[in-house]
Amino acid sequence: MLRKRFEWKFRNKTLQLGERTLLVGVLNVTPDSFSDGGKFLDPDRAFAHAIELEEAGADIIDIGAESTRPGAVRISEAEELRRLVPVLKRLRDKLTVPISVDTYKAAIAEKALELGADIINDPSALTIDPDLARTVAQANAGLILNHMRGSPETWTKLPPLKDVMQTIVKELDASMHRAMRAGLDRKQIVIDPGLGFGKRKEQNAEILAQLELLARLEMPIMTGPSRKHFLARESQEGTEFATAAAVAACVLKGSHLVRVHDVKAMKPVVEVADEILRYQE
Image (cartoon, rainbow, N blue to C red; front, top):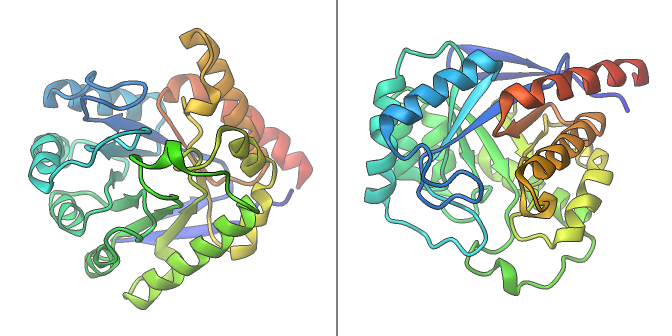
């Protein structure tokens, strides 16, 4: 399929999207994330890992201080800041790539942007704290709208979504317009279908198979398949191979950015998928 080109503009930066797939490296500074909880809770280790991710080829570093794994319990703003602020302070002016912060809270976003973050990745697509959009707009930052259904506490109790892709497209369209009404320019926004995030296991494969439907919104697309529960295998190696397959599918179906934990391993995957995609275009 043809992958449309976009310019993602925020603050004094412009990222070209579509010429090649950009890698968003995940840095979880949490004790309880699904695959790496606790590994980078210490600010010094988190700093070192961020540097490693950039050196491995990450185009953006996405830092999360609150887990959104299934069953995760929400934490207070104070706790989220306690985990996040020391890492952002250490990283300020130390990376050449933009920093994204994964949060749905306007107050956390405001502090993160003050400390040098360029992008806010809202896992709830403005459904939890609509004020977040205004905060991002005032800072002239970038915004990722990730589709979420329900909350981590309720995901296991939710029935399968009917017309899964049609629902995602409709709800992300609504979130996108909500962001623009709050003052964001269309060129500041990226959308994400939210693999996992309240979808049943088998529906995640359906989302990937029909990802081109999201292109109807005429917006750049990010996907985050890395180590998601629907890809889990008996061994860590098996899960990484499953992740690689999903990452390649994301690229071939039109993703402009993929969010991954192991940038070094996934870089050749996206390079090969990009090469195949060029011949499809």
